[in-house]
Amino acid sequence: SVKTDGKHSYCFFHQSFHDALQERHRKEAELRQALEHDQLVMYYQPRVDVATGATSSMEALVRWAHPTRGIVEPNDFIPLAEETGLIVRLGELVIDKVCAQLAFWSRQGDPLVPVSVNVSPRQFTQTDIARMLGDCLQRHQVDPALLEVELTESSMSGDGDEVARTLSAIQRMGVKLLVDDFGTGYSSLSQLQRLDFDVLKVDRAFTAQLEKTREGTVLFSAIITMAHGLGMRVVAEGVETLEQMRALKALRCDEIQGFLVSRPLPAADLPSRLRQGLVPSML
Ligand code: C2E
Ligand code: MG
Ligand code: MG
Ligand code: MG
Image: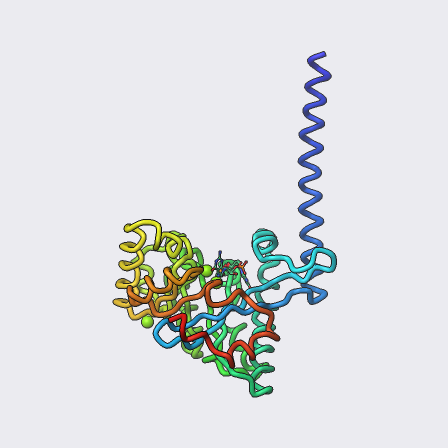
């Protein structure tokens, strides 16, 4: 009967909703455990100067060393961490790990370049991030010039004065500020002009358009001119081919990051990679 069907579909809906909710709770609990049991590991991806081939910096990228699933990529757990607020704790752990790693490399006498960390919008707006960074650097006795902070445009959307105060507190310590994934968010250009970022990282969607369309080159060129005019260095993200690298060099892009140079690597692989340097023939 109609009545039974109605009841059945209600139950079905209710059941799947219930399952989805349970699955989410399970994942959240598992992620919480991962944070408590130190299952996060940092990988590092070099950023190189296109003019000299020197490694200017490395980006710290988090992975979850899952007890059964192996290495889990951030796109699989960062969104959930953002939604649940676990990102605040995760972000603190990341900064602590990076500072500990920098201190370790420094003690070993390994080649040292600055490391950039990704700070989520929630961590930026809801915690005293400047103080957290300062405490962490001090605890590990790390030179603030070795740390850089990557922020996406969404971190800049809040109260303008508050954002500017936080950014300048970070910068006053000697920590550099980078705009991450530029061109994908909604930050206004006036906001960008008002805030004093050191480096603009252009999203890899723009890099991918370089060889495809003439407009791709026009757009990238305009971004570079604007960034230079505002006193920022420009990094192209997601550089995968020699052609892209050459095109970027011709456009006076300052630095590149991407699989062409290196995939993100475990910390232990970095010192030897840095000692080798980049293959000069690539440039
Ligand atoms: P992102 O900050 O824009 O990091 C760059 C991402 O692009 C990395 O992905 C990197 O592996 C990838 N990538 C680098 N070169 C290439 C390339 O040539 N081609 C392609 N297709 N991809 C390339 P990953 O490590 O999976 O991280 C994804 C995102 O997760 C990051 O994007 C960042 O938004 C977030 N994330 C990673 N680590 C952290 C962290 O410690 N904290 C926070 N809050 N977010 C993080
Ligand atoms: Mg980043
Ligand atoms: Mg990025
Ligand atoms: Mg500046």
